Image 1 (spheres, rainbow, N blue to C red):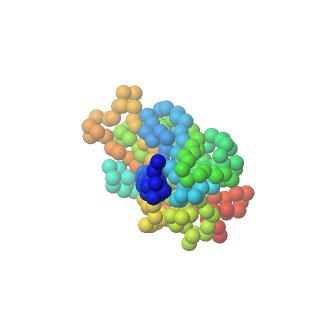
Image 2 (cartoon, rainbow, N blue to C red; image 1 turned 180 degrees about the horizontal axis):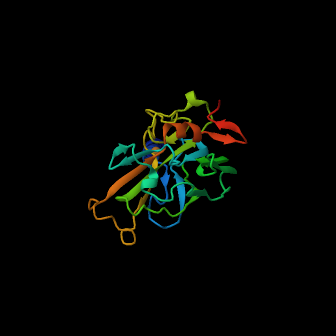
Image 3 (cartoon, helix red, strand yellow; image 1 turned 90 degrees about the vertical axis):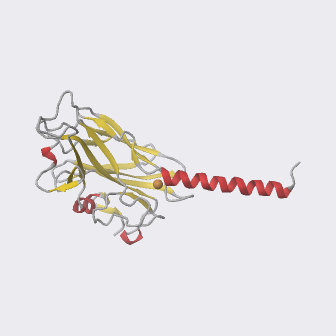
Length: 252
Ligand SMILES: [Cu+2]
């Protein structure tokens, strides 16, 4: 038989290992898309995969997602911001390509977010609880993206901003203890400078169908890598969760 001291020591070791495992799990499992790379011309059922809550004993109680609207979004080509082009120069049908798939299994209340033209620019879920050690899928559908044949784009990376909420606070209460913000750093109130998910957004990359839609002859062999990022103005407007005309998160 083991002495009580031996058992105590073993328990201590087991707890230390559990703490390490728990920590590394939390540090690694960022919120991302289930299928982050999709081919041109294919409609895909996808999921936001929530990686973790805000530390042991906390739960995700809501989540908010923003897709770049393509109106005032920032456009990068091979890593450099371009201002003389829009997403329409690269993707012929950008706008209203994303649709939430209704799923009230974990979060009982959800809705899409629409712009003034009625285009879906994001969605939110709330009235649920995901324990810290769980994961949850938030299903949505991405319609087929079509590349502009005359463009040199070989891929388009759509930056998707996500906030996983543990506690509803006002803007000054946004911290690692209350929210995980997987957002691009664009100067919005949801940048989360210094926080866990700083400038680490989820992405959806669409790859050109080079067989059906080959690059024009004057393009580089690799083609251009295009990136579409929601603007500061869109982030500040579309990231909050508004329920029946009243802002629920962040608190006002
Ligand atoms: Cu993480």
